[in-house]
Image (cartoon, rainbow over all chains, first blue to last red):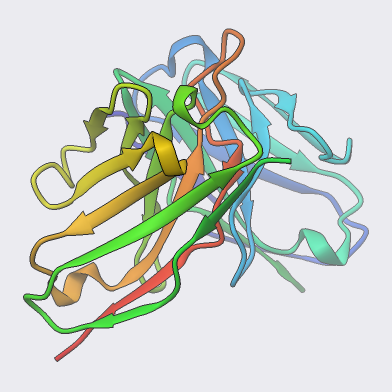
Length: 108
Length: 123
């Protein structure tokens, strides 16, 4: 089973700043089957990125992502108040899905 | 528009059984894998398992194999998650989520999610 480790655990930033979130896999993620989700309390998780770098429908271009193999990054530029949430990476391999433990993006 | 609407909150005692549901609308339900994802209090997301409603092929996370049963009913476009004997450690929010079925990244992520079902198990 591939283990995903996200860092930092918590990121404290102000609106208008940029955020960089990391997701590191214990083994190479096949074919970039890596996705990112935004999760706010009391809401369903929201797909942001799939295939390591493709934005889902309706996701602002302030969100970008890249990576390959074992190292993946989600970047959020010009933070808006609604961007403060928990972000999870997720991989698919060998018919199994695993999630990272999450990065909490909080308002400084 | 695709919508996944889950059943409401449940409060159960240890040892009781439970079946929660996820009603799909707006999409070709039989031909999309549907997954269940757990969030324990204060914790992250965990994939439990997935089902392909057309033929009921099911895959489970090793963590949840034998602990829960995932099923689906094509006629009502509903997926289910059930427990035969709940434990306190089953307390959490359970989400259903749909997997996309087209393209090279089909089945590799979750594009639509239900609103979550809170399950509380306490004596």
